[in-house]
Length: 255
Image (cartoon, rainbow, N blue to C red; front, side):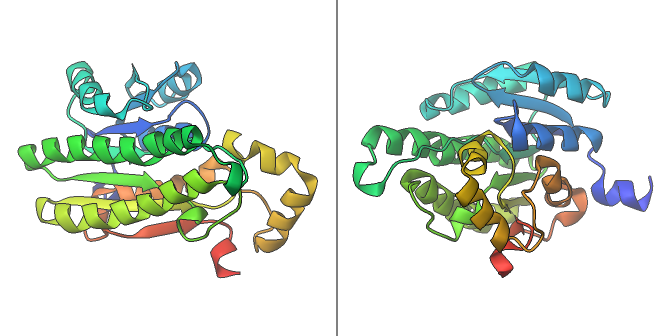
């Protein structure tokens, strides 16, 4: 085995990626497959494009359809996954949604819907996966997808901002408690990435221009820009990195 494989190879590992149908989730699933991991994609709708991309890597892809708006059933979904393939070594909590409205008009329905998917489901799935990792005694990796709104307030996205602040805090407390079991917990905070969630911003000429003027790199990111951060945090060689957040934002936070 080469030094690169020893540090970064994921052969023999199983990675569970939530929200793997499109955008960042699909890119993360494909990235992990290219490094040698078999992939479980968990989401509420079929993921034929993800399956096709992973097929080109020669790795196995298992699709599990589960509605994360019902977070109480997350543990049940994990049992299905382990029955289909093998225990999970790497968990990527990527699934999320965003709802926009002025603060004074923001509905409790929109608040609950986003918190359930973006935060509560991530907590319950992490808890269920970590319990099994501890029982096996083999360690593992949990990677949460945070946001620039884990650090900032934003506008018109109250529930999303609250959830992403929560994800960062959850990352740190899980890292503290799970480190003795050899489980690392870290986060990636993407900047402004061209995905379905940012369509409204990119179509607003004034808002898009203001965003680009602040980004030192001068462009919107693409999902593949997150690949190296994902590989680093998922890798065997990053066992002493935990409780951290990696910003992949074209320099936004430095401006």
